[in-house]
Amino acid sequence: MALIEFHLDSRSGVPTYLQLVQQVRHAVQLGILRPGDQLPTVKEVVTSLTINPNTVLKAYGALESEGIAEGRRGQGTFVTSSAPSPLGDDVSKLRRSLRNWFGQARAAGLDEQAIDALLSEQRGSARARRVA
Amino acid sequence: MTAALETQGLGRRYGSQWALQGCTLEIPRGTVTALVGPNGAGKTTLLRLAVGLTRPSAGSVRVLGLDPREQAAEALPRVGFLAQEHPLYGGFTVDEMLRVGRKLNPSWDDEAARQRIDELDLPLGKKVRALSGGQRAQVALTLALAKRPELLLLDEPVASLDPLARREFLQSVVEAVAEHELTVILSSHILADLERVCDHLVILAHGRTQLVGSIDEIVASHRLLTGPRDEAEDVSRLHEVVRETHAERQTTLLVRANGHVYDAQWTVHELDLEEIVLAYLGQDAARRREAVPS
Image 1 (cartoon, one colour):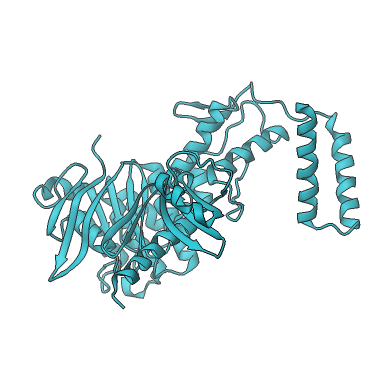
Image 2 (cartoon, helix red, strand yellow; image 1 turned 135 degrees about the vertical axis):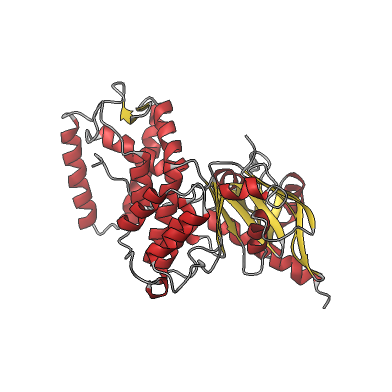
């Protein structure tokens, strides 16, 4: 059985191959996929999502050029040892405070859209500060 | 390597009516192509020309580098064609259909065919006419795949199926593409189910090709621009305008862009494939309205 299962959001507007790339990146960052782990085979992804095999190849190709994955001839595609290491324990505090923040946002009556707007506003101004 | 399908100025006329006209396209091997257009657009005619069932009135067609009529003996064993009605003998059982397929096709892979039938839980002893639409479609696809074609042409394969059977059918198609070196061209009057399955697109309307290309390239090059009405002409000098609508002060243009669109005057939006396809089909309708004298 495959280690992770991909899912697609057809309304997101994000191209299918990019959704696969993002899901592998996230799985690596969250430590769900570790170096040496095998990604689902092209056939497995094609069967579970009913998508074009070339889309999966394109996603795995992009992951290879990012250095996150490597293809091994006749075996499949694997997470490399140089893949970014998962977020460590030091983020657990951040994660907790973020969870609290979401709780407060909900309690204040903010909906998904308002939360997204706030997040992207802060992300934008953080980026601007870093540049300045 | 030669293209899976290549046409040059291909046309077919029935009486005074052109079912297909001036069709020039090239479908690379290893791709899955959606042939999209309304009913009567010429999709079936193009597919029938590709397998030599119809003779061209103009131009030429080659499949896998071969002429499907002049070089039929060489070309046709390598091409699978599934006509719209999934033609099977209703009075035959599934098992009998498999035996017919084996007799008629030199390159028949009986083991793979029987394995597919088994995996899909299709009853071997049942008469074809007693099967559901989805099961019949799967049997027809099994027969088409068992001859190990390099090119598989499917005419409106999912139009008559319910959503689940449609999904299962398309799943079988993409699995076959993943397993073998197979090129698939499938026609449909709707794009919805096919978008994820296909990587190339041909839009046909009224016997003419409106757009041919890789879906990634198509999505990347089309943009929706909104801006001042009096500047619309400048844009159309640089980019191909597919559709334009005007409000009193604002113009909205759907363009196929030549390179980047840089202009502070215009707001640029990305488009999804369905919007692009609809614009091309609508453009064609608009052109016909203009052509009709009022």
